[in-house]
Image (cartoon, rainbow, N blue to C red; front, side):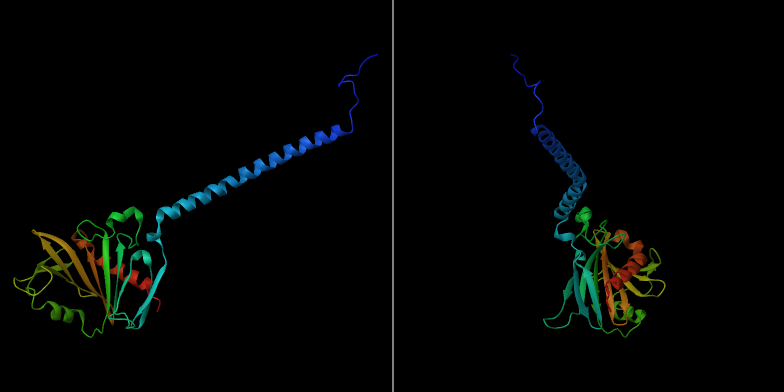
Length: 243
């Protein structure tokens, strides 16, 4: 009598079920692999954004600092490091200061961190101080009232359309050199310091509007750029003003 082998046995009804089970497992594995591959770019993008967030840190936040001076309001991104000055709460603020970077008058960026708080020769930082006060005098009158007792009336030719005045010995002034624009305009004057014979930090004094002025501190390397600094600062401040 011949003993039947596994190969000679007729297929049992459970064989198709096993084949279907294997097929289902293969399909599930295939679909899972496709899903993982499709999701990979989104996962990587999320990781990149997360890394950028932790790398940038809070110093690059652009949350707005809102306040108002008499008759005008401002909303300034906090990466310009705004400081608001008032005599005492709840007194109305009378001035504020921000820090910007040349050449684009941008706010803080981690790539230029070393330039952020230094204002001096070669540094692109600008400290901008806006002061709200009643202004009843024309620029030439302001020059005479602030500088008449400190500058030589003749002066000498200076750079970039400026006239230079060396402060007389014993004069009560925080500057050693003063530059006044040859052509009258909203820039009143630029005062500079001298250190061991070299011109160092300068401060541009200009008119913002009928009731406010602004000062911009910068390194003397940028003295020839004073028209661009004045115009760019005014545009920047106007972009922050809400009313």
